[in-house]
Image 1 (tube, rainbow, N blue to C red):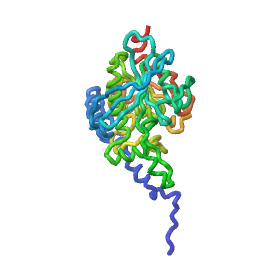
Image 2 (image 1 turned 180 degrees about the horizontal axis):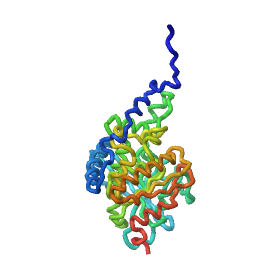
Image 3 (image 1 turned 60 degrees about the vertical axis):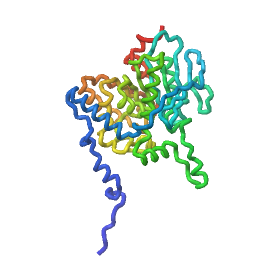
Image 4 (image 1 turned 30 degrees about the horizontal axis):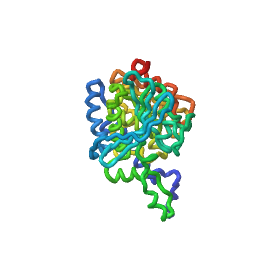
Length: 363
């Protein structure tokens, strides 16, 4: 008697994803947001923030003095651009572009500006990849660091690990093998995972050190620190705000949605992934670590990697979480007709309002 023919297209049990999705239950996650009162929410935040820090890893990096060194200063007419080199741990250096508006009469709010994938931080501060000046915004970043500075903020834009001047020099390993050279993000993500941490954990620690430096600058109003980023920089902004309460308001562009329908549903850079992140539920659960601080989400209706239905679903869930803090209106959005790109239509005014820019700096 012949055996029945197996239809490989229909038999989902052949796919490992069938088993894995069966185990994807964010509603049962041990660190999901379940608080019903502000007091319960505060206790959840303390417990979850510590657990998330441990999950990301590298919070135990060998400390070192920041030892800031200015290596460049350019007068751009209405603002000054400085390039600073910071030591963020015993074994790491980070270049940072600092954009300072001219005419400041007293300390002003400041923004941590995080670029996404591409050629690095130069793409948000008005520079081409070869370092030449650019005076017209270009690409999906739209030089948003410059736009924020011209709005009146001091802007600190770091070269995020794995990009630009912080790429790993490992291409020589592949030259003789005839193999494609993987991205720095990919190689670093695998190495970080092997060591029990994540690339995101490295970036978060760098951001904390940058905040330390920025808040010590005389131009900066200490209680008015914000953050903004696009794509991978949106991820950086979101998790930095989750773990650093000194960030008083944030704009997450081209990222906030649901893990289920974006990060886990299609190809994304390996730097997006954190082993065990499923223990924290969905992205909207983690938004409870930012609440009740103001958060604005930018989303293009034609963004193919962060689909609009997922964005709307995540926003609705985040507002329910914020409601437990009596702060549902603190989650704002700018849904615009565009692709995966910065909007800025609401973002700059949003940050100015919530960080008190209009009442602080320029005369």
